[in-house]
Image (cartoon, rainbow, N blue to C red; front, side, top):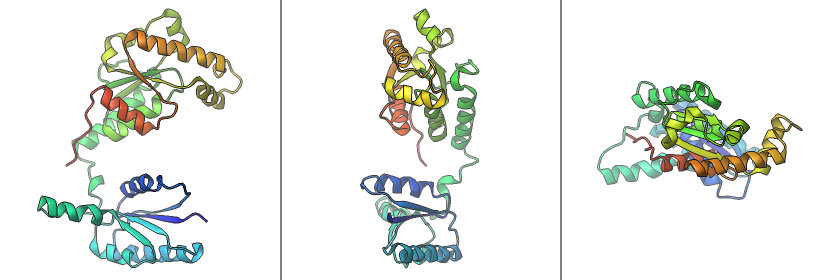
Length: 271
């Protein structure tokens, strides 16, 4: 049995889970993750302890608990469980209080209580924009912060949505098709927006594998055709001065971060 890891939070648990993934990825070991969100009362904290201690009996070893509980009473309850409890808020907030000489709010779910803020509304607007401008749809690109270009299945759509969801970036994506390569130039709707464009390329072998999952045995998925499209797309990007990267071995997070840096889009401030 892989070690059991509990993600315990008084809200969604996204913060705790993201941190846990970052830490656990350093170990060449599989883990069984158990999410316990919305632990916003001492009663729920006691119920969480029961789950944790039950895992001890089932696994024959102490589980690991990542927690972002803010309430001190709930924290004390979870700390009494038979587990390695890693309290991220205590680890970071208490030293920051001393350094800044101010007390933190100790408010539950504060990072997610932003439905009425401009930042949150911008993210929703950006998501709607990216969905409306997916795969060359709605070709009014003047409002886009970035336009991702590349051949079909090179990672444009997931990257666009990640940029919108995480950073409120209005990201459109536009496919390069064989007709564009035959004409030897960028599609006409893209020509006024070179400074907003960023290209995604991918290894032809990997592209063929992805396309074969969608259209097995087709010319679209043939390795020779994938090589042709990638070679032509790369040549076009170099000729037109479009910055690009290969998405083959990069995560969505890495691709998005590179794009933010390359096109000088600032990440939001935290306050």
